[in-house]
Length: 189
Image (cartoon, rainbow, N blue to C red; front, side, top):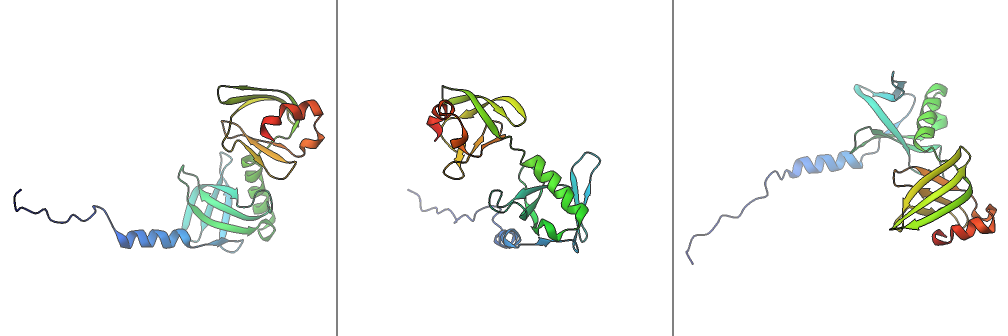
């Protein structure tokens, strides 16, 4: 062994100050309201937002409590894949009428959730379940992964189903289905 020692290496690109600033920014909550935020429809049907001097050409809106408080605490985010929160609309009713309408339209699109009224068939094969149902928007077939979070129990009788393409379907009350339909759902209840 030689007496040559390597100098201790400091991690490259480790910038504590920058990380602290980014963390502080992420933890900061900015409330958006009719005084500080201006939403507009884009020509392609999306929303644009201006907050002070900052302009976001396209934003998305997400309910923070989609099942328990759907008209409060709306997160407004950038539209990139790794979106970041721009701010929160505390209550839709606090926005002016036209803005509230635009936000509701975007939320309706984002949370489009057909209600399953009839379960014709469910076939379980190779880790997937193939559903054939009738919804309040017509007949539909979709596929979910078995296990995981594809079927979420929102209450004792209400379930939310997410298919492999992240489309949502809801059964508001499994007790309203026929005994034959409930038997088809046995794996998921």
